[in-house]
Image 1 (cartoon, rainbow, N blue to C red):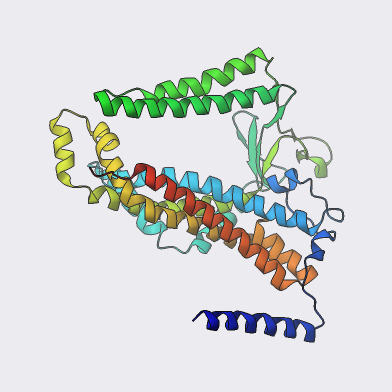
Image 2: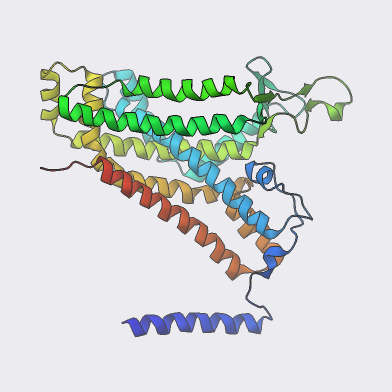
Length: 380
């Protein structure tokens, strides 16, 4: 069996090298140091790597694609989880309006293809916004949106702001310690501890105190909108504030709303799998419905929810590759698309792209397996 596998791999490699030689192509990664001569839309990736067409390399393009893919997947997972849990609980609500809304949303969203939803948000919603000379104001000029994207205030950290970030890290560690103490205390005495309020206070007060003591080393650069002057210079000015391009918003919305519908059904199934007697016993002890859900039902349901939830996280990350359809500069679009067409290194570039998705998937699975081991029920 092992010999057959080794022979199969050798045959694939040998056949590939022979075909490449026939086409006068070589195998190697030297192209990564070559300059990339194409523009990339303004994103977090281009800002981090200071991308400039003609001077930046294909390796920079690769890193930019990874960052942009990670950003949309990371925020999509958080938003889809929050929305999915809310919808899943709403579908089991005794309130007819909440139950009907959740059911309609889930059945419609999960049965419409993701690519079609992506087109809807990009072409039907965001492309119908005012043109670049117009705007829809948000928060009285502090932010705004038009067809070019969402303009927000940009944070400008000054010297000494690192102390606030260190304080935030310390506050997170303290909050984790408080959470652990609360679990042990409740297990030993049965008395609950207000972890949420205490943890929130620690997370807010400690960094805020350090921030104020160090002289508030953070300023904000607001977007500037020019309504007068030459027509071509009107609109939001480049380099002022922070811009979230419409392609990223469309991808994030589509992935979040689509995945949330599946997560909602996973949550509903997990809750229904908990024996009804658990709810009745908790209510008989005088617990309110919210506390029953928080302390009794959800902890038991999590052991059923987490495995399929992991699959949805992996699907969301891989589905981000559909963003190539609307030219969002994620990995498939800029590296396996535009860059590949220029350098023609199909095998190397596809291999590099596959390695990224494989790494994302393995890290996600390892984290979720670790989390599952922490929340699973331990039988005595």
